[in-house]
Amino acid sequence: MIIGTDFTRNLNMFKLPESCVSDLSEHDELMFIDYDSIDYESLKRVEVFFGDRLTTDIVRHMDNLKWIHLASSGYEKLSGINKDIIVTNSRGVFDYPVVSTVLAFIFALSRGLHHCVRSDMNRHSFDKYFNEINDVFSQSCLIVGMGSIGNKLASVCENLNMDVVGIKTSGDGNRIFSLKDLQSVVPRADFIINLLPLNVDTKDVFDMNIFNKMKKSAFFINVGRGGTVVEKDLLLALKNNQIAGAGLDVFQNEPLKKDSKLWKLDNVIITPHVAGVSRCHWKRSYGLFSENLKLYRTGSFLNNEVNVS
Image (cartoon, rainbow, N blue to C red):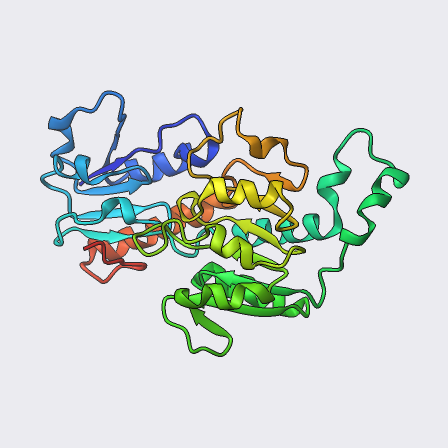
């Protein structure tokens, strides 16, 4: 069997470790796919794909493709592919690192650590932020996107005695609301955490209408998708202090341009789309794929099958 992979980049997160290469090569032929110089004739031989950058345009050339395992949670870029191709994602692999990143943002923003990184900061200069510094405990938290990550985050926040409300596709109107309720529930939150995937329903959900309804003391945290936020509206809300600040890991265009005005704001913490990074990544990611590979060989149902139609 031929297994194709695009884990060839020179980054630990996107380069298949030698131990995994050896394991796969023991029983199957491993084909490394370079998108800068694609051999379309060779692609026709691939039966199984393991990676994160495959698109519908490339899939059309893969005549023998039976199963795609995405090393990411999002799968919108494969929308509309041949329905006979099995698609699985890596739901669950990124839960703990993303939750850890959100908690880091919550504590850093609440405690004013983003101000402390300045080289001229001292006790006297920090004093002007006195009325902005708060405890995390007993704060209110709105989690927009109550999937696997959202549920784990909610559990941790509740253990911090935070008042947690969530939003998912269908809500019960009690503690879990639907996306159409965002405007009505966002005013109550001290922290608004965006975990939404990007699709036709979520594109540009966070715009000025939403930022205007947030508390002026509220913090916006985005570890979902950049395209779910109207970035110019967020920039304006932060610049005009309509909200207290933000922790941003994803953006409309990545990497974030060096001339972006977001870099100049002192009420923003920026990370370069690394919320899912962890030294445990390959243990979790390859572990899920290898378990599914065993199931695939026996014709069994696979873990994390998704519908991309």
